[in-house]
Image (cartoon, rainbow, N blue to C red):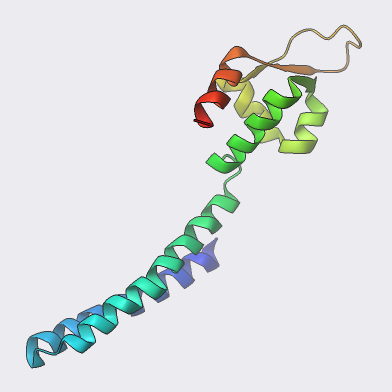
Length: 133
């Protein structure tokens, strides 16, 4: 993540310097060309840069909105399963997160005492419906 921050900071600094230079040219020479060029550069470079940086941050976050939404779809569609399967599909951090906020719970499994099972709760179903609206 450190590399992404450096890239983001350096490009943002260049854009800020361009903006300051264009303001100086505008004030001294009343030249709109630099000001317009800077705004276009900020739109063409700054917006994609912001989008790229946000995507990098989201990829690094195990509990990002997109991943939680994806895991919530998995939970509601599957309805129940074993802890090992859930962790294999979505990760242990997501399993613990869903368990702590009440999207799933661990009922007693009838098949084997060593196997931990999960089951979706009504809250999980309701949250999925509210996310898809």
